[in-house]
Length: 368
Ligand SMILES: *Cc1c(COP(=O)(O)O)cnc(C)c1O
Picture (cartoon, rainbow, N blue to C red):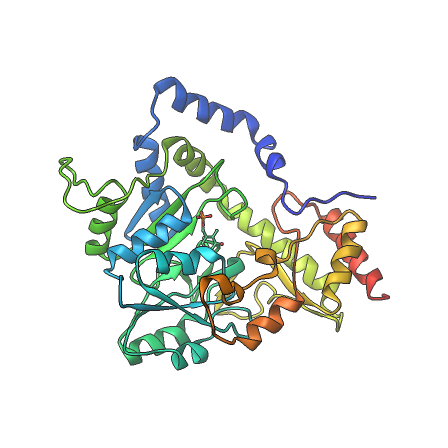
């Protein structure tokens, strides 16, 4: 029996161990830990990669959202519409700046549904925050039409969307600001926590630069209440190195997705995520491969017994189901989705043979 981990953290270090070790040793030998050249290089290279004017490394993807929201002036009394099908960090960031997260449904492609968003707009709605989930960008035409009609800004949680595009434009660059996470299991993962804020707006950029570093300006004078949320130089050095081969990382993930599609696309018991190229407006980078499955829990147990480790995202709980947080909204589409969703191994270390094995285990489960 094969053993296929959901995400092979250590393998991804080992396959590039010599180069990564040298990069980290070089940082240590120079004692260059905080806000040094590697941070400036990475910010510039990330901005270039995404086709955006400004990029700022910060301590993690959650801080990125909080600082972004502060920078655009969202706070007490404001409402921000976010999908319930997301990581708690999206909604928590809205709450933590003093605003109210308003939860909305996802559509058939599992992404924030523009028609449902429009129903939830009130006089207090300040922003819509699409989450560019699983390496796919939302239908930004539909969301931007709603935002423009109601005079509301868009801000993006693109934690899972680095390099994903809609109509040729990168996730994270559609709104007033966008955020990325470099958590180790994210598409571009570092060796600890890391995140970034990107924006084309010079004023927002100035605010972010202050807020991430204790509200200090270039002369070191404190001009606002800020955070200690700097991407550390060691992580920036690692990320700058990994960014160079990131296009290959994306290509490999798209090829794994194509292989799953070819091997599983005919099974009526499954709804697969859109295949690469299925919709010419979308360029998906497959942060995750999240499908819907009949008899999901049995399938998961079967896969586990055959050595294939899978995940039910966020322990099977969309944000609105955390009753302790005070949500009372009813979201039947999201509820139904969470009874069926399952993530298969998706990373650049999984081999074609392993993907074929996973496919054969699933086919056998459904009697094929
Ligand atoms: C990972 C993630 C975040 C938070 O990123 P951290 O770096 O872990 O703080 C926010 N939103 C979504 C959708 C994520 O997947």
